[in-house]
Length: 215
Image 1 (cartoon, rainbow, N blue to C red):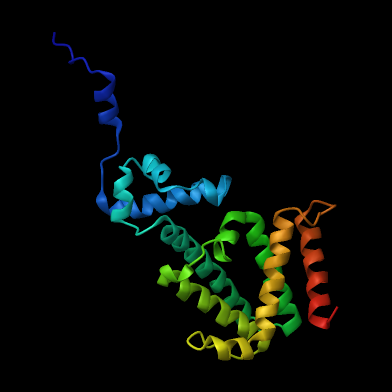
Image 2 (image 1 turned 45 degrees about the vertical axis):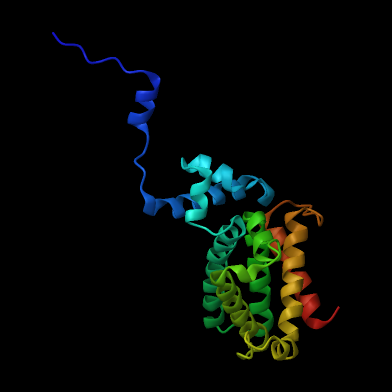
């Protein structure tokens, strides 16, 4: 009776290891970064750590992404696109302006509660977002739809920011308000005494009405 050959620990690991597929590495690196961002901070993400989790050498990271900031912006772009789809659906509902702005503000806050580190990435965490064209396109489109919600017309001109700053002041102000409220509630700088989602949404609604009507 023959017996199977003995295997040492290294052979066992080799047998269990997933096959290396070059085409999967960019997606695996992004997924690993998203996992870190869901439970830790932006500062805890590093190219070396992501490569270790995926099972490739650190140098391999730069075969797929020019920099860590580029990858983080790619993640932010993906979430921007999701929020833009939500805003398009909101626009199609043709709610009164005030009600639509309340829904937009509540959506921003709930996004921040679910994804606090992604919220940081989408608003200024990376010093030079222009390094990632996907992020620039996604953020421009998201803002363009927000302009239509707030101002009722498509007047955003990303290729002429001086003109955009003049035309879209109400939306810039409202975006700053939404981000500020989301950031403060996410960091629990503003408390939620009842501790419920419903109470948080009522609070955001009241704040938004105050801003729209002039404090």
